[in-house]
Image (cartoon, rainbow, N blue to C red):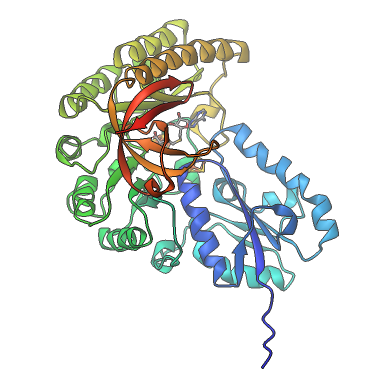
Length: 439
Ligand code: SAH
Ligand code: SF4
Ligand code: F3S
């Protein structure tokens, strides 16, 4: 008997922004999988294009419109092609997106991804579909079962979404809504499924992951439960807020072997008056004290941070205070940004600094951070680190993985090390990676 199977439809997802979007893109692909879609890596042969967008800075948001513009010809050639915008720009701008770019068929906010299959029906019927509610039903309730695919050895797992902190510069509380934690039982089930499909390292994600309260003992409680899963070898979490680093979490860094010695703990500025204007609710001194406590618990911990230069009202002295804080703390890794005005946030009302001043400060700050990053990397040379191998290198016989400190490490090794943790002696430090030999 001959059966006529319909061709699977192809889905192209382009992801911008933070790791939570990476995770969400996977979940959206799974949700549309139920409608017969398989993923493709090229927009040209797609039946649906989804842009999973970021609204954090102006540039990030503008990229979306230039990308959409590029699909004009493609849509003219393929009238059945459907184009959707998801993520934080979708949440922030909603219907405005379709008004500004009429070739968009679908706009879906980050809390509504479980409604995608129904929205797909609507766009196939020729309608425009828009959903930017913060629905009562939690998207994760519906999106519980992960597809049984074979995976790489590392995975993200969102445990908490949204933010109640309202830093004066930030759109996240508006685009992702109030802080919501997923129950730990569901997270543990999802983690077990991931491990069963080959995952060895899980990074727990949240806009304020250490504010997680889906477990009676908070994020530390969840980490200790994950610690019991056989086959899971490494646990990480990001991003944390200094005010939510509780004693139990610091203790976990001291005593949980699976919890990796790496912490991303943004401070944004080293000036107390700017921190106050940013509504950060901590001081430079309290941050420095906290870092000392964390380093006492885990002396080899690699610290990472985020900085904003040119926040409205930032003086030369405020900026010098930030540089002093960086010198005192010493970062192994950091991200830094020019302040970007975001519509609807309190800081947007304030007079802005000239762009030249911001550029100059950003350059000085980045060169100091780069120096510290290089110094940190250089101290790895001669040391033995543990590497989880994730992929083949470009050269024959070369494999690439991550050390416990999240440094990329190259080593000559057989394919069989893929997905395993191996001891490596570091022999070389280059711009953004280390090289070493298997022990
Ligand atoms: N929840 C995380 C970070 C979220 S956004 C936290 O609180 O640390 C990631 C980073 O983007 C922030 O840490 C901040 O440094 C930067 N950022 C956020 N809004 C910004 C803006 N309006 N202009 C420039 N950088 C911004
Ligand atoms: Fe934004 Fe501040 Fe919340 Fe981080 S803590 S997501 S910077 S409002
Ligand atoms: Fe961007 Fe939204 Fe993440 S604004 S940084 S994609 S939470």
